Image 1 (cartoon, rainbow, N blue to C red):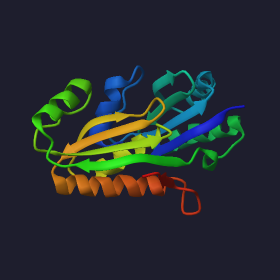
Image 2 (cartoon, rainbow, N blue to C red; image 1 turned 120 degrees about the vertical axis):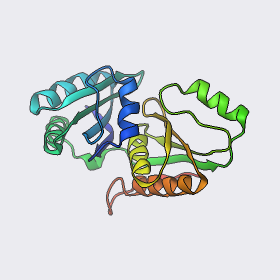
Image 3 (tube, one colour; image 1 turned 90 degrees about the vertical axis):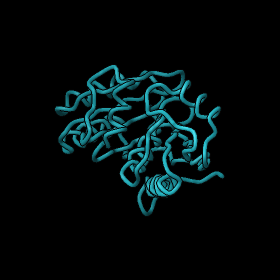
Image 4 (cartoon, one colour; image 1 turned 90 degrees about the horizontal axis):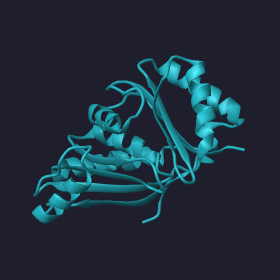
Amino acid sequence: MIELRTWVFIDSLQPQLAAYMGTASMGFLPVPGDSCLWVEVAPGMAVHRLSDIALKASNVHLGQQIVERSYGSIFVHHRVQSDVLESGDHMLRYMNTEHSTRHPCRLMWHEIIRSITPDHATLINRDNRKGSMILPGESMLIMETDPAGYIIYAANEAEKAANVKLIEARAVGAYGRLIMSGKEADMEEAARAATAALQRMNGPNGPGCTDTM
């Protein structure tokens, strides 16, 4: 039996997030404006069957397939939203479930750190080589979610809402982690947009995203 941990549909990938996902993609690279579906399941090896189903159901491209110790993740994408949704429907039918059965999102941590020092900026940049560089004096938004895949949705909605730089959007592992930087006002707006997006993740009657702070 496959456990559905994360099910995230993104209508239009924003430019920075699409580029960031492309730096880690071992499959077909996404481009800005693509629709995207991020799925995380347990056990991890089940993603091979889901990838097969998704690719045979429509014209989607497989951007990434990751098998971790406990979980497996895939994301499929296509310019046409209906193709992505069609593949998603086939995967759900195979698992005999609905997307509403996914794990509710827990917002483990979110904070804005203002006016980053040069030492702090240097260490962040050394650890994160796939996104933009944070500069001393900028403000930094940090966010952590459980399950990890929800961080992709938070990152996309934050980029839609404000003038941000994407430093990191790590969506695999035990927790998802997001780092963005920019002006303080932009970080505040990005934080509001990301938090609101996670809170409505499961719809108006669902559990949404629980803030554990």
